[in-house]
Length: 174
Image (cartoon, rainbow, N blue to C red):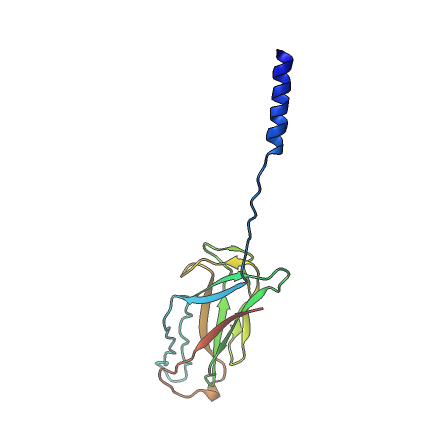
């Protein structure tokens, strides 16, 4: 009787090991390139006139309220991405500078690296490099904090102006 139970158990194990099923799962991952600057809205930077003859203009405090957020999924073997910035016009005698901080917040993946302090012009300049498959999280306190500042570069070229709009354009590219 024991031999019969053993043979039945052996046959059952062999049959159960042979019975199987398969499911084919098709996976798609699109190439993604998204960029946003948060929070939305305008920032104002104003020089302060001196109160004593012979003193220089006082540059405005640097603004650190803006954050670069991005999502990036690159093609297999694809190049890393970078973020560039440019301005629509140069203000004679004034340099507009920007620096992206190291990534922080809720993101993950291969986040970019700051290019350090960059003086903006009408030609795009790289501010963040080495972005791979990554996401920074959304909104303020996620991604790369931007420090935007103004400095006088040539006093001889300065002329009074009021509320001159300068647009900074950010681009993410390979």
